[in-house]
Image (cartoon, rainbow, N blue to C red; front, top):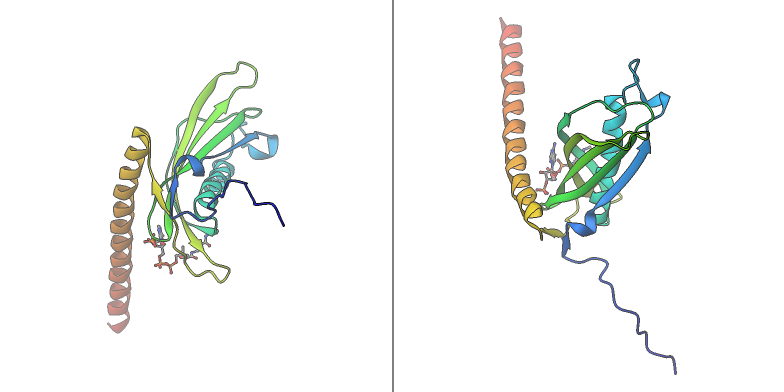
Length: 186
Ligand SMILES: CC(C)(COP(=O)(O)OP(=O)(O)OC[C@H]1O[C@@H](n2cnc3c(N)ncnc32)[C@H](O)[C@@H]1OP(=O)(O)O)[C@@H](O)C(=O)NCCC(=O)NCCS
């Protein structure tokens, strides 16, 4: 007779996840290849680090393939210098149906003085997709602390703002197309 499996059962696909379970972190050292003529970390390189660190949180929340749907509101607060250590921390702020808003905060550490400063923050939206690129449902997110609840509520306001902006851009494009059409017919 085989002995019973007494290991605790872990639900790998819960319907609700906590913010803590999505928290992710990455640290990089700024090398000459990452910098501009002034020895400052390139904005594009930092955006790459931000995208990767945010994706880690989205993977942890969805346990699915994810794609970056939007990267908005990046504040580059102060430059990061050659030789600094850059630490990025991310977590999911809110999950919707198939999309998740992820917040990323970035700090730079001067390796000689040990001084640490907040250098950038960003919000990104990831969408869970299957192997064929079809959108997939994601678990809901349960905020637990006061800060998590605040970010959860702010994420809904940012989503509504993104949607309004998207409609505004589409209307702008339609108006430009109509003008070009009218010009052509003249
Ligand atoms: C993101 C993508 C999967 C959305 O596909 P779609 O056919 O527009 O899907 P839907 O209209 O059904 O929207 C699906 C979700 O994406 C969200 N979404 C779509 N476009 C978005 C955008 N530009 N910004 C924020 N969210 C967006 C929708 O709000 C929706 O969220 P919800 O399910 O939580 O309500 C598709 O646009 C895509 O594949 N884009 C390219 C992604 C990519 O290549 N990224 C870079 C490399 S990873």
